[in-house]
Image (cartoon, rainbow, N blue to C red; front, side, top):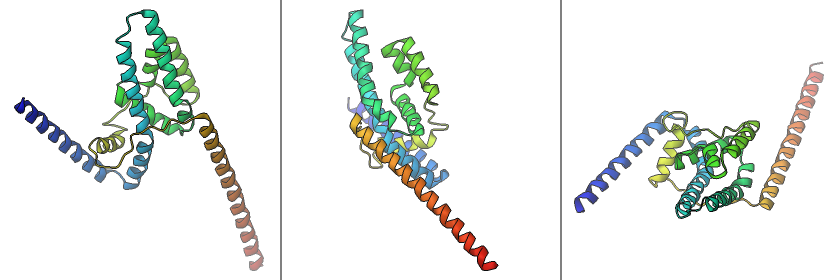
Length: 217
């Protein structure tokens, strides 16, 4: 038992060193501004992927104790509703790119795409329906995580989190309807103020150009 523990410890250390080496290589290769932007996105989105993985583990454990087909179907429906309730307003509050990142990270943590999760807990028809809706919103529910390709930078940050090299709060904040509505109100006000300021800048620019022409005359 001591030897086995020692071997496991050595393997863990080796894996950690390899991960740190990979992180150093990526940090040197990647632009630091891109790294900081992705770090902010992962800190915001990754807790929701971990929360989804935990819920699915609980659902699977519970399903394993149910023998009745009818009860399994009922439990799957209830499980789907729990997922929907937890993520409904969270997803609405995200930018499109953040929604894609969430689905990719859920695939990383569970091995399942969003479409596969829906199919598992609500059936093939529901998965097809959600997939078509996803296309309308320009979201691919079958998107997969690619740690050695397009998601290489994201993977480096996740490895930093797993190895406790950076600060990270894994608590997922579930967004309620009222808070979502307040966030949307603030967002619309920011957009309105931004447009108003943009018009003022354009107006000031035209007045300056007009004044400059008069001086030349």
